[in-house]
Length: 409
Image (cartoon, rainbow, N blue to C red):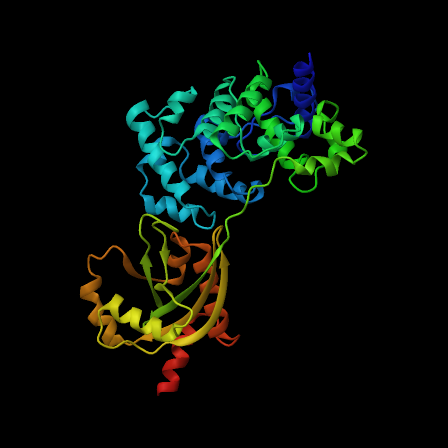
């Protein structure tokens, strides 16, 4: 009876309070409420898959515009499978955790090859797809196909541990299995997808990590964490903060990066960009020529030495310091020392032969730069470069190049 009460209270709350998102359909219990129906192309099994991958480690508000652009560009599994990885990376640029895009692309190819373009409806079949783990499989199976399986993400772990006042670590495979088992027992028999989304929604909007709003919680009376706190004379909102147990964070490391905005004097101006390796940090994305260097080294000397090796030129134009950009990854605090260099026409001609057929280096216009798969850190570099070189006098880099020519004359 307690479980039935929990399900009913949670689903009623979700029907009235769910956020309208492009990958969600109208909850079953909202059918009798005076709410506009929600049905978007993104509510297909494929759309649910895309949304779940995008939402990993990324806030809903950030994902919405990326999701809509993605579904417009790649509306079906076949469209994604047939796309080039570079197209996929370009659309993903700025969303972070770029390996997710490559796994989605590889997964789409698997679905086309093994499942004739149709996503499996069961967890085991979904787990066979590249990049689909236990949580994502459970989310797709329950939301898209109504399968009665749990979908346990960070929000659900928080709700469950507070609901049970469960202490101890929650990151191990054993702990996750136990929490998944409990969450699975709670899943509603007739509205599994709504129930799992309601659990996630509760964790995201009410049972939040640092400031839970227990007064608004539809299942507060069934929450052991809240009632234990009250029994001990402690505000429930404060007591539940101990659940789940906080994981020890891995210390971030500092890294210095020398980045050069290399352009040639032609009109319109063109920028040199290089492609990162397909594995590791920011896989397959494009960037200005960049190299990590030790703190005791001079970044300009490092830049010029790196350019000689990269371009294969005996001499390279001297670089001029532009400024610094700070960018923080989940595990790296990166300080980017930005410089720029103007490549003379003679060197541009010398490079033509070495660049011919080289798919990892190219000259691009500013518009092309923004259309390609470029990371947020490099967009910050471009922004700084434009601000420093135009100084309010020239509207574009073309104007900057012209000003250099005038000075030479």
